[in-house]
Amino acid sequence: MSEEIQAKIGALEAEMLRTQKNKATNYHLGTLKAKIAKLKTELINGPGGKSAGTKNAERGFDVTKSGDTRIGLVGFPSVGKSTLLTTLTGTRSEAAAYEFTTLTCIPGTMKYKGARIQVLDLPGIIEGAADGKGRGRQVISTARTCNMILVILDASKPVTHKKIIEQELFSFGIRINQKPPDMKLQKKEKGGIGYQEIATQTKGMNADVARVICKEYKISCAEIILREDITVDQFIDVVEGNRSYIPVLYVMNKIDSLTIEELDILDQMPNYVPISSQHEWNLEELMESVWERCNMMRIYTKPKGQMPDYEGPVILHSESNPTVEEFCNRLHKSIMADFSHAVVWGRSAKHQPQR
Image (cartoon, rainbow, N blue to C red; front, top):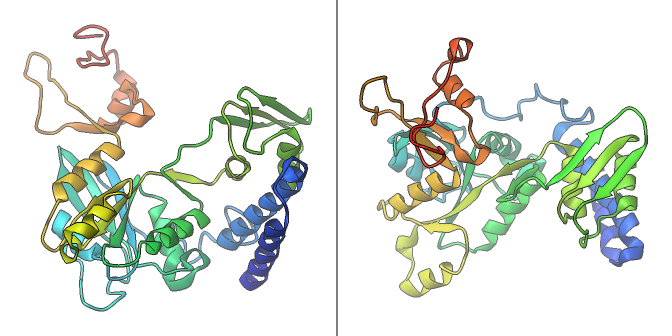
């Protein structure tokens, strides 16, 4: 079944390569992209759609989520993921000179700036992981549950490994260092397809392309509002509704084997941190980068008439603009039943303190 679907995807991709890209072919290219996206989703989830195959053994590793945030270590075999986990968390993860030492997910917890960060050492993936090779689907399924992904690369290996891993994550519905497009797609019972552009579209989107993609997904009535300039692929991602937008940091490990000149070349690559997990080089910068990209903020509690408790902060993610209710639920879900008001100090308060 999977071979038949891959053959169909290959035929559609070949047709896309043969098709010239211009305004006259936007409609046809949009149809082809929608069909390819549907087939890839079917390849991952099974013929029944999103809920199909959830009892399959390839749905991910069963690891209980703990701590304030979760990061996953993804990379090829023998790039130093297990050594990095042991260095950061103290959790013993078997490391050896041969590949595929780690065969299951090994969790550990590190503490930084008062936050408890769960780190997952995932088995090494290989090219074709999104298609199920080398337990790749289990690895990437678990990576989708993380707040952040660290792509571990061997600094002495070709940089093409980075592109391969990016493609595998993309094929499994993970959008690296992207935000969901600013658009609205609301299904309705009648009225057909309503299409509105607030921002001028210059990347191939128009009413005809939107309608043909909706037709491919059997959406006959919906309201579509585009608030920014988006691509056809971004529109399909919203229609699919199962994409994960996860920040990714590239960690170049084993820099102790490089020369200064080679390090200068690597320094041109954006969004990366060079380390040596074996020698514990530059780990402080790595942890600071994780803290910044996870957008964590510390909130301290102050008992009435006492000094604030600076020992055990409550960690929330500032990107989602956390509310007082989220803070209370983080302490205990029963607090909101008897909640009256909160007194807040900090930069976000209009005056100190603000009730």
